[in-house]
Picture 1 (cartoon, rainbow, N blue to C red):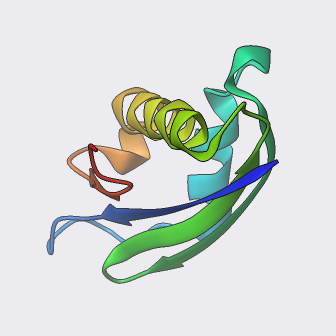
Picture 2: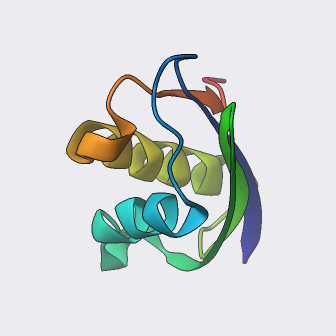
Amino acid sequence: MHLVEFTFAKPPRAPEISSDAVLAALWAVCGPADGVEHIRVHASRAGARGAAFLLAPDEAQAVRQYRAVCRRALAASAALRDWRLALPTEA
């Protein structure tokens, strides 16, 4: 199991949303192939940050898998419109 930290940055004028809303957006796009076992999120005025535990063959693969989850959540959630993924960055 691998730990992957993540950070979402929100535009300054975007409304704040709860940690639960960010968490729901992430779980909504997770599938069995993503290997996600657990997610923790803390939302703030700047966006949200957190950590996820994933099953993956190695750390690099875990980061790729979770980066894909984060991007799907940003694309699928109206609440996260205009937010961006700040971490993990592309390798």
